[in-house]
Image (cartoon, rainbow, N blue to C red; front, side):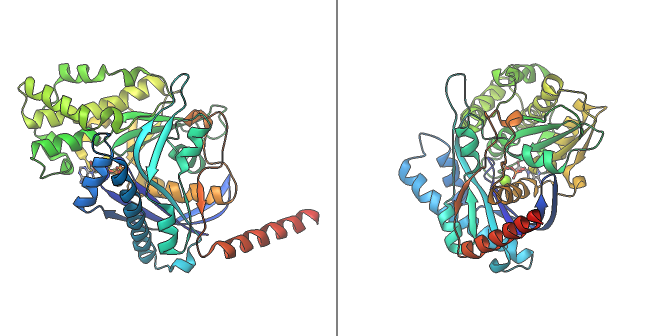
Amino acid sequence: MNVVGLMSGTSADGIDAAVVSLEGAPPRLDWRLLAHVTVAHPPELRDRIFAAFRPETGAVDRLCRLNFDLGAAFADAARAAMDAAQLKPEDVALIGSHGQTVWHEPPTRGTSGATLQIGSAAVIAERTGITTISNFRARDVAAGGHGAPLTSFVDALLFRHPTRTRAIQNIGGIGNVTFLPPLGSSRDPIAFDTGPGNMLIDYCAARASAGAQSFDRDGKLAARGQAQPAWLAELMAHDYFRAPPPKTTGRELFGAQFGAQVWQRGQALHLSDADILATVTAFTAESIAQAYRDFAPIRLDEVYLAGGGVRNPTLVEMIRARIAPVKAYSHDELGVSASAKEAVTFAVLAYETYHGRAGNLPSCTGAAHRVVLGDLTPGKNQLSLLRAFGARNDKADEEECG
Ligand SMILES: Nc1ncnc2c1ncn2[C@@H]1O[C@H](COP(=O)(O)OP(=O)(O)O)[C@@H](O)[C@H]1O
Ligand SMILES: [Mg+2]
C-alpha cells in the first residue's frame, strides 16, 4: 500500500510530504520510502500561520479561512510528493495528514489536555480523491494523553536495536526525544518534548536580521558569538525542564512572547546579536543534554538526530559536546532522512489506523490506554479500499478455517 504522510511542524517553515510503501503488520511491518519533498510556505501563508498561534491575532474568522487554505496547501504538497515518486493518485491508497498545530494545552493534574491541528482533511480528500486520515493527536488527548510525541510509536516500531539503547531526537520548532530500550528489554520506551528546538533560534535570527532571515542559516550567526554561561543557567532555570515526563510544550510556552523576553534580556546584558544567538543555540543543546541526564531510564548507547535542526552545525556541535562520550548520528543513517522523518511517521500512523490498530504508546504520551488514532475522511478510492480490505480479511478467515 502506498501512503502519503504530510507534516507542517511548529516552525511553520513548510510542508514535508513523504510517500511510503507499506506492507504487513507490526512487529513485521515492511516499509520503503519512495520519495520526500519539502514545500516551503509562501511568506504570506507563513505570516497567517504565525498570527494563528497567538490569541491576540488568531481570531476565529482567520482560523476558519486558514483551515481551508492549509488544506489546499497540504493537497498540493501531497501531489508534489506523488509526482516525485512518479505515482498517480490512483496508485496511492491513503494520505495521513498531521495538520498544523495552532494551539496545544498539555493535560495537567485534574485537567485534561486540548490540542488543535488545522488543514481541512475534507479539502485534501476532495482535491486528491484519496482517503485521508487526520487529527491523530486528538484521540490520544481524549484518552488522557498529551497527544505527542506520536513519532514515539514509529520509533519503537522501526528503530529499536537488538542490544543498544537509543535516543531518537527530533529538532523541529520544539525538540522531542524517544528513548528506546533494546528489543527484548522489559522497559517501555519513553518520549517527551525536551523544550525549544529551533523556535527560539528562529525568533532571534529574525530579530538580529530585522526580519530578513527566518532562521540562522547553517548556524553562522551563532558561530560568530560566545554562549554566556550565567545567562544560560538563568534560561535553564525554567520550570519546564524540571517536570518529569510525560510532558509536551509548544509556542504557548516558548513562542514569540518568550522570544521577546529573551531578546530583551540579551539587550539588557549588552550582548552582541551573535552572543545572543550563541546563547539561545546553547540553550536548545543544553536542554536536550539535561533531559538525557535527568530522564533517560538507562545509559544511552547512541543518539540519532532528526528535524531541521540537524542542518545547523553550530547546534549539532553543541549537542555533541554535551552528550559525549555518547555519539550522535544523523537520522539519515537509519534509512529515513532527518527531514523526512516526521512525514514518514504520519504515513505509518495512517496505515495503522486504516487497519484498525492503535498508534499511540501510553508510556510515551501518558494516555490511559492504547487507541486507534485519527479521523477518516473518505476519498473517491474509499469503496475500492474497503473491497480490498474485505477481500484480504475473507482470505485470512479462509486460511484460518483451513
Ligand atoms: N540550513 C539550515 N541552517 C540552520 N537551520 C536550518 C537549516 N535548514 C532548516 N533549519 C531549521 O529547521 C527548521 C525547520 O525544521 P523542521 O524539522 O521542519 O521543524 P518543524 O517540524 O517544526 O516544522 C527551520 O525553522 C530552521 O530553524
Ligand atoms: Mg517544518
